[in-house]
Amino acid sequence: MESNRAPNNQMAIKGVVLVLALIAAGAFVLARGLDDDEDSTAVTTTQPTAEATMAPEEIPDPVDPPADDGSAAATPAPAPEATEAPATAPAPEVTQPPAPAPDEELECRDPSTIGVLVANGTDVSGAAGRLSGELNAANYVTLPPHNASPQTGSAFYYRAGYEVDAQCIARLLGESEKPLWPMPDPPPGGLTLESLGNAFILILIGPDSLAQRPG
Image 1 (cartoon, rainbow, N blue to C red):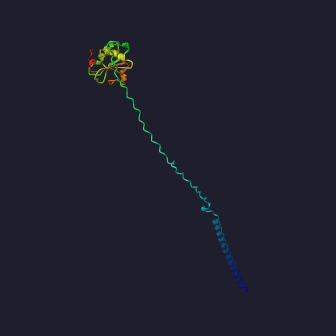
Image 2: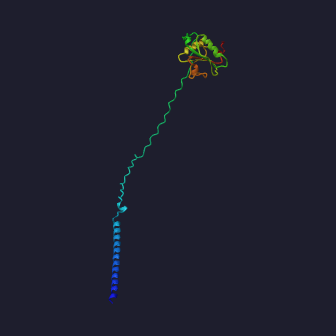
Image 3: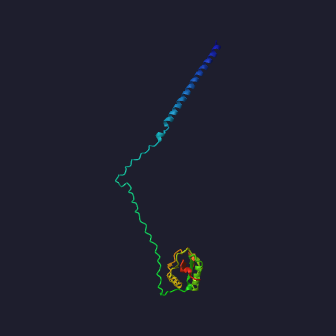
């Protein structure tokens, strides 16, 4: 009988130990669960939210609008008055100097100091060469003759200061009635200042007596 009781007692003790172990394990799990809840609660309550930490936006005080006294509106600047362009002075009119009287004595320079260019503005061949030879015989310094654009009449042209010398040549040739003009720029007859060279007098031959002079 005693041998049968000993095994039964050992099994009872093992069962009590197992129950106690299960109770201890359950208590441990329950305690862990409570600790987790407390930790999460503490985190939740101590963590600041974005709304709590955001500083409130300051709203500026409203600015009173300026009093409308009529001065705020910009006054348009007056438009500039149109000014008339100054009138361009007309070019001075070139007038032909009066021809000297036939018996008036002219103060002619030495012909050897006066350069003369003769240009032919006609279809008469050799007219400028013949007249140049005639002036050269009178001791004038003649430049090589030139052809010019067609002319309607003969004329004498002179550089500034050589008007009297042009009159002397016209009188020498017996052509005092021919017009005398200041030298224009550019020269007449299609000539150039380069072709005029150092001539002080230009004789431009037209279809009249100067073109028909004998050689």
